[in-house]
Length: 171
Image (cartoon, rainbow, N blue to C red; front, side, top):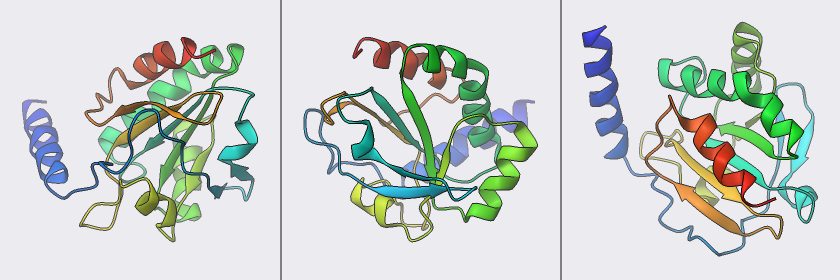
């Protein structure tokens, strides 16, 4: 267990040094619009939620890795609170749809995970790192379509509760 914690810390430090810190996105600015598909070819556009609900977008590095699994399962286990309060939540990675589908099916994930295989949205949001995958960064978008909060130092253990509490204040 101790070696897993050390590995997680070293991995986090390594990934942080690879860029993808979303420095181009500032709180208060309009969230860049996008359209992406999930593993089941359902298409989602950020602009379709404007004036309807707060939106949580969380970018994650790789499906089925320990930190990403912990983060996604936290959302899965709390999804009823998000739905009951009209808060949309999406995970985004550069993984192909096939890999995301296996991730969803393996862990019973019950919310959309979107594939940005072309890496366009990840580049726009400034989260694509030098290794070619997403850094772990979360954006909370208000009903007006503006960035209300950027979380660059994500704690995968507390992520779901943290973003829920913040997004709830935007209702």
